[in-house]
Length: 427
Image (cartoon, rainbow, N blue to C red; front, side, top):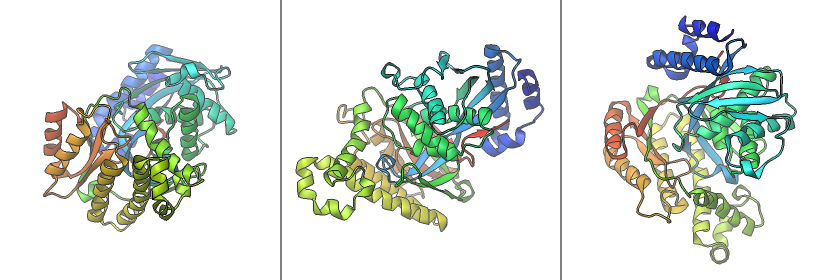
């Protein structure tokens, strides 16, 4: 279909069933209009004489496993019903042109941009180049395309807007040039490569994997090149709960050293034990070596390592609790994860600006609200600024959101559902 035919197909309800699966029945009119608007925007930029495809990649929420993936630990994560969508068409050259709503067009000649360029670190064109090079490196076909993207995954929200964008570039290459045969797990590993090598940001693999795979997943990164991904069948909504993410609006400026210090300090402990990452070290060995470690790497690094070991146990326990349908136990484990992040991982606020503690305040408010109610709360994602996560009963969700919005601003609290699919071609 060209763009005119695609808009008619959408208006006629051609993908309504697909949209209901992804976003729920109540959101159908809004999502249909969103997709129509995206196709029209593509036509305005690139014309209608194209065979166009429409793609979606979800955002993600980390359920358990705070700062464990980069040291090859374990996580529980879930795709959510916020996503990036793209309208794209293949071209007959090696140029990728991507216009993301609200941003200038990125133009990348993938036959030329085939190695990292330091001047392009932290720029979106580097992610595009890195994804395409990663596909080629892994033996897959790549080609030029034009695309328009629009996202409702808020930046800085801990819902992985950047990982969703990376995976989207791979998703488009997969379906335009590889007949959809590249597994989403592999696309996630290529996305990590793009971010680490071409974008210049050290990161784990959880964000990309959760965005790509969909549903609730348990991931063991012990073998980083071949992580073990297990799908967990658990319907939070059917148990009467929603997942709330509160964006505290913190200042992310100059936080890169805080984020980078977490994996670096954990790896410093591993190095002191003669290993590369903490997953290769036993907790008992660390405990037995504490006097020497305190002197060589410092107390905070040791505490962060102990958080890592405890968090891996909590992921295993949380996975078992969900498999058994024991939601009360799962919530207890989530709360324990939050306490460990605050006390031992120490990623709730930056010591460079102790006056700003939006995450601490949001966690305090969530605890007060849920004190005599069922549910759980914890820091969400990287920490230091950004978001907290809460599980609240559907009957309490509106009151919880109103309380958080009154403190942190309109729409600060997002009420989400878990989405069954990750990176897909919608049409």
